Image 1 (cartoon, rainbow, N blue to C red):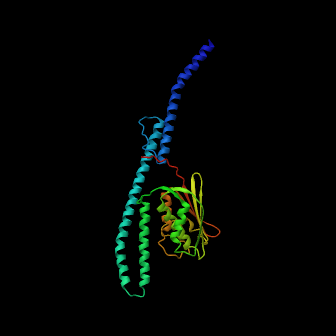
Image 2 (image 1 turned 90 degrees about the horizontal axis):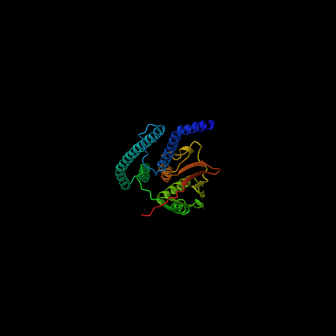
Image 3 (image 1 turned 30 degrees about the vertical axis):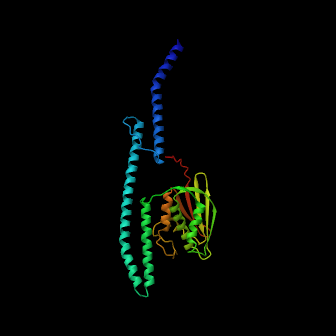
Length: 297
């Protein structure tokens, strides 16, 4: 009799707990599905997160995630509009300045003034500044199409140096290691050239520039070092700011080269840092290794 009562009580408890267990299972499955959808969205592969009309706790989480997605996309669209507006304004100003600068150049070339050479030099500097600023703003506003393909970074570094060698024949470049990553060859080459140009400007005759390329399973590292003495510690965090000139920097230029490098690396989903060494300055570029599965049309 006691056993029968005990069995009945256990059965009753099980019947009472069964709906709770089923609800917990279903809620757990919904949370797992939501988690996977959020991971896909953050990775750039997912679509719209689901809204729920239910009134349970999981529905509150689902609706909060959907609201978060909506706010993120609204903020991104607002940022893109502002970036396009800034890029268009910069382009308009640049184009408007090019015509009077061309006229000034013509008048200077026709003039026999003893200051003609210096005037032409300043006009050329302004033209370089306008061109660099326009490129940077278009990069920031996604104004250029990037074409990604497998690229040999060692070969890219060597080819980039060949374009600079005639300007600094007394500098020595060494390249160590190698890696193949997916990148836009044209823009990555410009990033390498800007870094090498910066190293040449900060080293004396006979200066040494060293490029070391290391590839790991998930990331590729490109380290560029020079023996130019480095930068002041207070300058290091600001080297990639537009128009910023480090203390003691006397070379010409627009002051936009490193800002363009940072934006190019950012467009490759990587990042770049600067630090001092015992002999000079070191730039470290970190690029993700993207093993993408490409479907054939």
